[in-house]
Image (cartoon, rainbow, N blue to C red):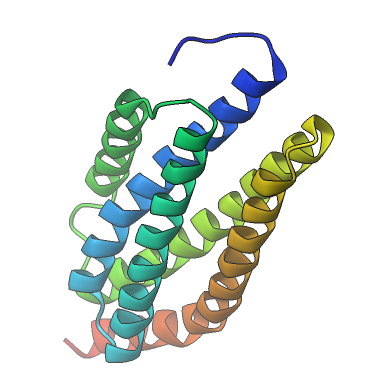
Length: 167
């Protein structure tokens, strides 16, 4: 997507960034589902995967309606970053990985909340009510997920320590 300076280009770039982040989230959530040590966490990640796929589709439709196209290069860069993070955490046991995944998912959800706040503000300033509404709707979904994730971190970390010491 060419970088322009008009407001429509800026809104399209913000949406494209959101699409790229959601795309990397889809990849990450698939890994988190397979690495979950608790069925409740796996189910939560699966539900959010479905929601994230819908969010990405809605964003792509909005970008297309604005005449923009998604730049796949951002998806590749995000996947490289996620792979590097996984390499840094090599050698961890299943409990540590599951705990790390909850922490990472919580951090990403809060990043997305802030990103959608930015998109909302930009779209509102541009007079793009449809994009502003979409941003607030998705932001509310991300906030809800973050609130579900946070209370799972501490119990899973405790369980990982207890099980790790016993083995």
